[in-house]
Length: 151
Ligand SMILES: [Cu+2]
Image 1 (tube, rainbow, N blue to C red):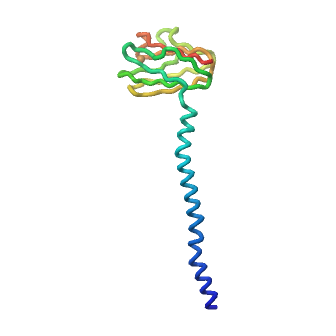
Image 2: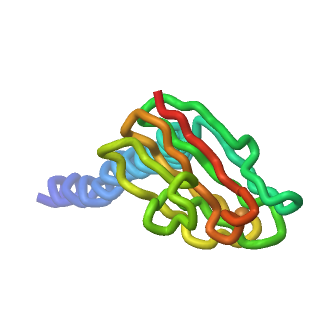
Image 3: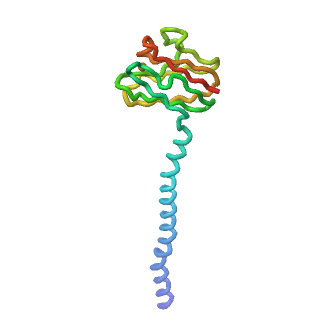
């Protein structure tokens, strides 16, 4: 009896030790997954939304650079206001001063970045092929117009 109790006591003492290892192993695996996830997730999401082209916005003169870009359907254009005043990306024909400045292929939705402060970026993914003419709301009168050709 005394001997059995001693064995049972030893088992009880060992139990936490036996449990610790799988728990630690699980924790190690989980933290490894977290580390892998931390590296792979931003890379994956960056890859998915990474712009095909970047269009810059300038003040003097107010311009989109380049004024025309060509992409494939499903690709994304990123605009960067690296100037010192407000600009915008306006692909909404109802907002244009001149109808010839803003036009979309049939079936395409209008788009509008709103006012972009200096250093702001804005992205839009073009799904419908065709020619998109857009303008900058503060500078349409100055001829700040752009074009996205989606193949
Ligand atoms: Cu502008």
